[in-house]
Image 1 (cartoon, rainbow, N blue to C red):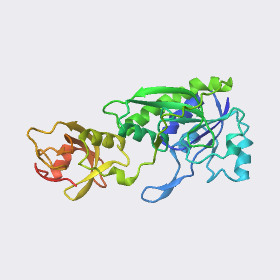
Image 2 (spheres, helix red, strand yellow; image 1 turned 30 degrees about the vertical axis):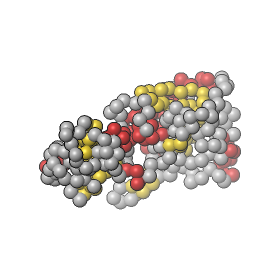
Image 3 (cartoon, one colour; image 1 turned 120 degrees about the vertical axis):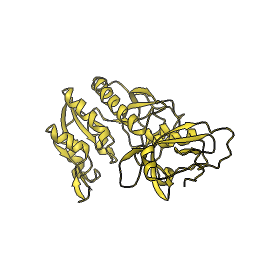
Image 4 (cartoon, rainbow, N blue to C red; image 1 turned 180 degrees about the vertical axis):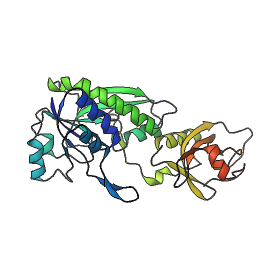
Length: 307
């Protein structure tokens, strides 16, 4: 098929490569413009732009698709369909209607659950047993379009947002290659059910601070759902420290420690229910480290309170 690919972050890269490897003609790749990055704040191409250029595919990064010129340029590609994966711009009706076979979004949830910006993080934080990827025909609403195909995967007890992100990206790559023949054949997608709609709101910075009054199981899900970015955090020794991995444990019996109080000298912390063992952390300006490495620079004895 002759396709337009629209995506920006690392999640989208395996899907682009899979379409190219399967022999589809990618007329152009649309992605977000290069952003300032690094110490010098020089414009850095997105992961999708870098991958497309390596494959020799034309890259376009308009600031908006609302103007007639951009819409005409898109239509002039005469693509049969568009594949959209975490692009970052709203597609107006003129763009959605341009390809005769439609614009198809790969969304990282089992719709209608977790429509919106942060489906991977929200699924982990909510304690969902499984998630997946859906191939949805796009319409003007937010992730409301009918679904043609989906693939499921269990969420493991130790899955972080990064691990699930990488797995879903690989699943999405296989799924779209398997589904394109059905799109070409005009198979109708299935409307989403009205029941079970949940919205995966963008992660707010205020959510990332660990509230030790919460149960340890909930804090474990918070840590995994925000690992590695933006990272759940607490204060240790007056320093803001990200917690990247942790493990719920029963509080020692009998235990009357207040939430946030350390229960030993190896970062077992009392919670509203149970306790949380910190396993991997990150100090400001440094890379991830095991908790025992942190303790070489911090003396965190039993009975101290974490902020």
